[in-house]
Image 1 (cartoon, rainbow, N blue to C red):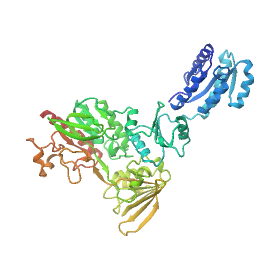
Image 2 (cartoon, rainbow, N blue to C red):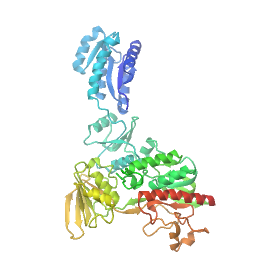
Image 3 (cartoon, rainbow, N blue to C red):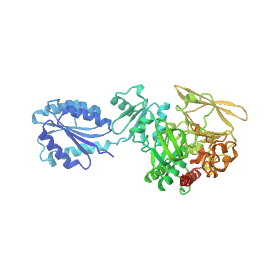
Image 4 (cartoon, one colour):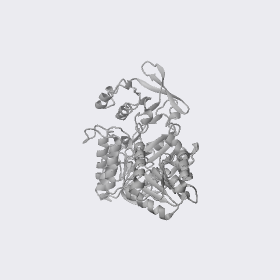
Length: 554
């Protein structure tokens, strides 16, 4: 945590050196001591300190200065740091002005020069003032601040990106937060600047895109080399496992992720059936452990960066990125996972990001406090979100097409849900329409598939978890997929008539190899995958085994 500041100002360099020396001697263990001999420079510094979220505990200011009187400076300083204690240094002839300043700027004390010995004439007074200041001092959040409108889709995207990439941040709603209004005034922001990301270094990014934020936060969006042993596309559990094993086994490994590591598992509030964690762990915790482990083995991590195509030439694979850059690699592991399917109901698109969200329950949980929240979906992700949101929401409703959750959700989650009073299961229920006011969701139409009964109910948020759609549309290479778009691998490829046309090796494909030699698929994107975190991790590790075998051939 940053130390609060004691700020000294005196135009006489000799006096300034003396007071700075005495302040450091007594207070340097608890406070930072800053000093200057120019009132104008000091005012500029205060604005910069405010932007960097610094805290000033006490001003110690000379009264008679050529640029402005000390009282005038304190009046300006009070605008930036109203809670700081204010002490004026005066000569005996200035005591009348100091007394007047007590009313004008709420001066806390005035000291006459000289103050020797400080143990008698300086420290006791300052100690009392600093003790009083500490009683009311609440350290502010010292990190990234996001300002915007609660029901702005772009604000949601930024919050989701920061949360998924494990960057702590403070959300400030410009309509309700006094701190947001303070930052708006400090940076002279307007409505068109929203959303705004304020960084600890004092920089303020207005209406930024994700790549701009990522670059400012030090994420790597450009590859360091042109040739790798293996490039892993997608940093979900399977991709992270492949990166860990690739790096640990000496392969020159590049991991590429278009949004944030962890995939859908990374957004899970609690994974309770993962081996070795009897109390469960969050998706973010698992992701953080995995990405740290992979980097320790020297892998290169590219994020946020999207792969737009794969091509082959002279035995090497060429990967084209969204920014036009091209990477060459000897082998590829595709672990792009799945996306949630879109809910086909009237009004859903109108309020996506403004009360309606695909996944992302952890990002928007605080905004659901004491609200009516709906979840669509009967899988484990939906169940974990319902349990998590029940801690915040007034009521959580799970809408499923079937009678109950028994055919689609793990029994331990069903037992948890049944034990939580503010979670209600709505069987045979479809969401057929979303309505809203002021560009935000306010109502949902629910239709019973058995009775065709329709009813419209108040709704503050809707979280959608309805099935898996593989993220494979970007693959233009002649890689065989099944009718649902999942990538076929191994012996299953031989069932397809065009397999022999594209496979030109004497051997059969390895278990996780696609119809293109040296390109592998693992995790949820692969046809026949088990859709469990543990199995995805296992497949990622297994893919590296087959990468080694393929590299031994070339």
